[in-house]
Image (cartoon, rainbow, N blue to C red):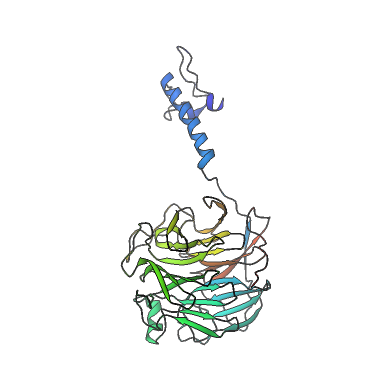
Length: 399
């Protein structure tokens, strides 16, 4: 009988055999009175209407995971991937690699790698520049940006600091020439000229620089800088300021800018994305992207959020609320052109869980997703096996 199956005619009881969901109040299927039937029917109708208006349905996965795309010379292997960007020519891909491991301090390997779309390495550079490369970006003029993202007190930053490295942002040409550095090498802080574990960087079309500063145990702020690196503003605080309050952070791990100039921050420790305008004013708190470590926005304003930590118990300093139980690891894809940026597709973690998974990711112009996995230290290429409703070919970038 569906929603209207409860029978409350005079002198009769509900008949649970018609609708177990509506007419059963326990496993023994006790009957309900006329009042109970009316209540259930009204509530069910209300819930059905509410769900049609506001609820998000289960998403689909139109991608397949593939492995071994990269072809490296000799016995070199990829380590932890800190970012992927398509080249403006549409025929190459830039990858930031932590020198075949999780550290570049003392390594003679190049961390910045240029591949063709068949996975062949065609260029590389950057050996000796970075100790713990973390954030990666390619701006609208074709320049590359890299952050040194190990926070002071973290063992991953210690070796670099001992060598006078870390806590900086680099601007480079695509041939490897360093054009600008921001911050003092090897010196941490949370003032207008210092950083502490900057983890992400994004460049607005007008040249303004946004930094997610910094990695867990470091600063808990985002910083806006002028194109020449001059400080403009900061949102959030320094070491020990972890907070779940709006416009506060716990481990801001990545940062991206969409076509409307909105600044999206992967507030990883708080399992949310915070969205700001170009003046640093909070616009939205999005909690439907799981526990995002890395973000990518294509030219169609499709958002890709990598979540490699949900469901794992996260304990200890600096905060005790970082676990995100009840959520799956994977990649969530959403359309930023929609009012609430609904998640339209979800790619679940494809392998047995062994701890931290996907962090940073990027998308080429054909809609293939390239995601780096932490514990497995590998790059996974996700290929659309049927046309996704969003994303797909995004065209060439023009400078």
